[in-house]
Amino acid sequence: MSEPKIIKTPLTDEMVEDLRIGDSVLINGVIFTGRDSAHKRLVDTLEKGEELPVDLKGQIIYYAGPAPAKPGKPIGSIGPTTSYRMDPYAPKLIANGLKGMIGKGNRNDDVVNAQQKHKAVYFGAIGGAAALMAKAVKTAKVVAYEDLGPEAIRRLEVENFPAVVVNDCHGGDLYKEGMKKYQK
Amino acid sequence: MREVDVNTVTEAVKKLCMDANYFLDDDVIKRLEECQKQEESPTGKEVLGKILENAKIAKEDKAPACQDTGFAVFFVELGQDVHFTGGDFVEAVNEGVRQGYEEGYLRKSIVGDPIERKNTGDNTPCVIHTDIVPGDKVKITVAPKGGGSENMSEVKMMAPAAGVDGVREFVIDRVKRSGANPCPPVIVGVGIGGTFEKCAEIAKRSLLRPVGSKHPNSFYANLEEELLEKINNLGIGPQGFGGRCTALAVHIEVYPCHIASFPVAVNMQCHVARHKEVTL
Image (cartoon, rainbow over all chains, first blue to last red):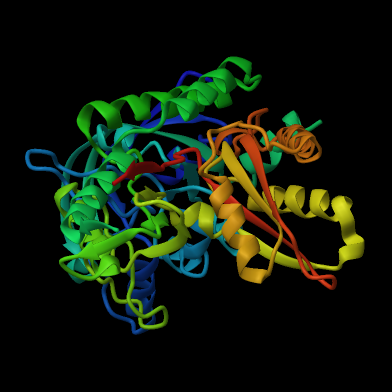
């Protein structure tokens, strides 16, 4: 694995352009969790022309629903969930300023095209390495949709959160390239 | 007749749910270590290293290895000479799940009505597969099942003419189409034969076997080995980032079937291959 690139949120177009598939990154700063139900609500809000409960401009959404925090810990285990379920909603959020997504698994063409058009990046985190990733989370606070429980939107402050660039804004796809390289 | 108080069942289930989510079995760890040594992709090697580190942290901190602490699926072997007292057996198991998931800080991932999708708040109800067996003991196995890998599973009612080639094609295609979604390296559980539901059940049951254990019939043992090699030649690799280790094992279970039928099921299991058992 290449020496990891250290990145700090919020992301700019230039920062996104600098990221290429296969790059290992350590994310620092604020990221937001959001998965199935939260995405539906965010997009419903945009379609009604109303303001989002969190400003997503330049931000990263982590597709994750954590385990409950034990006393004294900011958060419970927190690994990525499968991303394709957010595909119907992601392009709209990207068009509204979202710069990054963290999850696992393939995205559809609409998401990949929106990423290229609006300069956004898709990172893969290690599915199932949730206790390890919880160590990178320093603070966590529910900022919207508390009624959704594990699916509520949380604002996380992270330090050196490990991920790999899967789809960059140049049309690269690590899943395709990686498989090509190692298939027999 | 032996009497078993259902409160004993609740206590046992509560502990099983927590232990299964915190402590990965040695067979899984050992196989991950082997794969890490053999992995050709540097990224893949690094990923496997992090997965092993994660298992260590989970064990030390008593934290769930994966935040998706799953649907609580139980396999029960119930001795026919057991008489439960003090309440309802199924409710006792659900109560154990309720307590285990709450007290163990495990995520509650079950929605009540599948269309309405409101979280039940306590990870119940569970799923229980019960077999009545001779004797006066109760063996309870829990296998918490995450959604990511379960969603990549499939049952196919093939024509008998499809034969073993049909099985090969279906299993490999299923893994290929799944890509990174089920959190590779995976264990591929394959059920061949039975009815529509039996086939899925034996595929799931195969995941309880120690990782990499062979089917007792040499034909199926060879097929397991052949499929594992072909799957690992797909190049998907750990987390789909490219590499050699896409699957830790292929486990096949078979059951007789109808003259007209040839059901085949693939139940995908992520690398957090959790199961714990107790005999009461």
